[in-house]
Length: 364
Image (cartoon, rainbow, N blue to C red; front, side, top):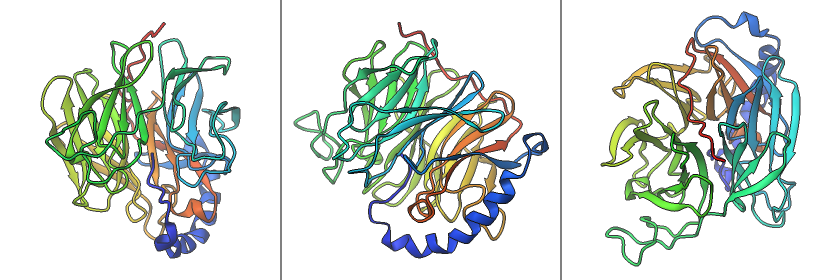
């Protein structure tokens, strides 16, 4: 999930200063045709994301369409249903909308990240429903029930299952990625846990927990398997020491630090490039954009807003998807300005990298 805060008052002043910049820059970016974006880092707004549901998170590309899910935020009690929207990859026109069925709209509800299987079915993380699946006709079925609420217990873990956290926080499913064997891995931002859902669905099981994932708010966040399918990479947006990190974890083995960002940089969703570079959505209002990390964890490049702009073209990007032709799509989660302007969008950026293919297994 992106970094929307349920108590935004401390950032309200920043949001108000951003309003004028959003309007001016968005108009300019919408005027840039796709064919003109040829240089590395050239970015445009592909499509606005509607304020209902707002706060987009997950993004995926398939068969000429860009899919995005929301609202990945708090404060949704009484709001309309969460949804997945599809946009034409070439024009940005909205092609379809799939509202969630079965949410209790009188309680907190949210969609976060999404993933496709090999049959073109879309799997969506939902805070109330767990993982639900949309077939190619948009029919919704349950794949995995909601994550359980674990009690807090610091290491050594006792009375398991429990969460290695100081605070007893509810589950917050954030990102989902398939492995080649059909198992799905899910990050849980508030319970310092990575869950595994077996091929075919069913209840999620604890796969890995670590007190280094613990956070006062958003800990484990973006999650992807490396192109070889041997390691899980996960971002920790902010830990209990205010550090921001990317960790690497073999499917069998020990956790290791891959990269440490400066405090407050807020790494979010991730995606692997074709040569093994790791693209990281950076959600901080003061450094929004994309960090590109080499396979050794060093920084290869940063894509950021031009001087004088905090929110255009990047306004708290939450997740990344490659389109296979050298460009990336990012959801502008707009964690601060979205509380005021309600302007959310999908950003289209040239990176000259086709991206590593995601694992899209045949689930059956």
